Length: 298
Image (cartoon, rainbow, N blue to C red; front, side, top):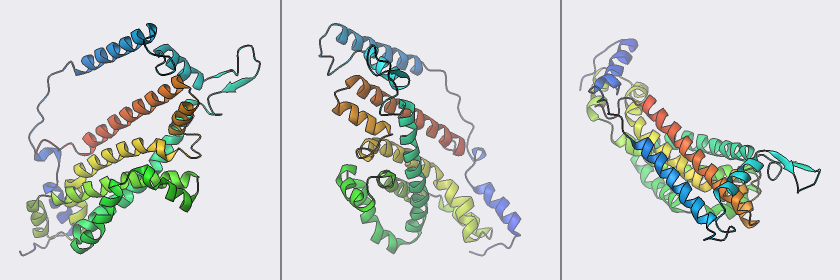
């Protein structure tokens, strides 16, 4: 194929015109308002009412299933300062010397560092493995091996290597999030439209322009979905990551409160972890829609 000689600026402009964009597809069809949110709210209210009814009727021992009010009280106490015991003048703040929100923020910080490393290394390695087939055949078995391992299977080894500090926790979260990002990047690059690549080459695009303006935007939806999946894996790993010397940390607090038979606080921690995960997933979905508005319109 004979390349057309064009100035760099013209090449970039022409390539961008064939790269994925909102204008390349049909106009989005407006969806009619649904009652999904209302149904979700009703479902939540029914669940809480059933929970309250079971505990109010004493059908289950409060040690195993505390009432919603007990869980709420544990949540409030974990975020405030209270006397250490009834009639005592000694005041303690939070749980394990930290407020509950501080435990949550520390876990989010660890997940953020682990995810940042996983995204940087995973996307870069995905591009390399997608372009170098012999290296792909050598490396992919190891990535799939790590992906199949449960976090508790190698946390002991990480402790031996890196101690019980945050380095071990970040490594554990990194290893949980890294494989799905690599796989999603490779899958995204495999699905790049060959017509776009050939069109860019015919316009005289060099390798850097081809990757930055055609291949990466085309693979971006798959990469972002891989990141979303990896964040879910990181959240499910946070308790395992914080089993040893994890305070402050919401996962460690959930584990310790369970060992101390403080069931209301355990359930409060579980609910906080779940709600935080849903909020984070919602933010990621919003970012995906903003960064890839052309998806579903081509």
